[in-house]
Length: 338
Image (cartoon, rainbow, N blue to C red; front, side):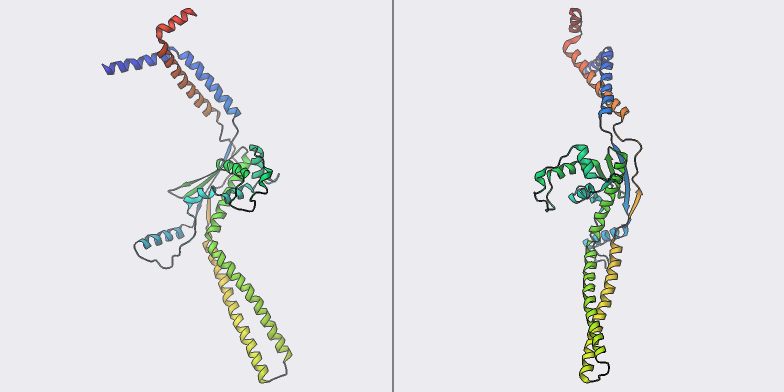
């Protein structure tokens, strides 16, 4: 009996919707028109996308093997830990203050020399507060109100996604201009890769800089001793005494020691240059960003269908509720009075 009553109720609901179909169609049509108007009013967005991958998978694999081996108490020689940022952390880089500040200073229109920060301020009506210029300007961790607003906009403009299976990195840029979208996408990729590279070679680069400083210092000392030895030899060409011989031997010994140190430091500098090159991650761009021809949003057809569907649901619910509370007899009575 309950099943029969349920079936009858469902049939009655469908019959009510069918009987009031004109009203439903009118309301749905009105909502569809709202969708058309909204699609023309909504801001135009172009999306440019680039995809790349970190080609240095061998070092990552070796590091993973080393980590697994250490868990079981086995040490794998020759495998050093590295400071490479894994691809799954790239979205966090995109959220960092360093990334956003560098991106804001990038030029998106070379001909007009327009920077991203200037365009976003003008387009979104973000005004610079005069009080911010003197507040903690030299503190890197400090983020002003203006910067905070710009950072929130960048979170919507630049999207970094990772394919966790193949570790492909995809960067998308959403801008109201096709050229600006492509420029912002390329700039975001270059800054992201720059941060990853700098973090990876930080240790090797510091060692290289130290070796170069030591080499420059010893070169000055080497030239001083070399000049002393030359001056001494020029001043004592025809003098042969034990004191002169001993002094010349001391200068030559000092010269040879510094020269040997110079040779070793030169070798060390070259080795560390090679180490920096070896540690530098290599990125392969699978798909380069390009100027999109078609806008990504708003899409008129999609918006009309969505608003039309919303109108159909709302109008159907409205008709059913109206019919439930008033009932057929009350509806007829209202029509007679009218």
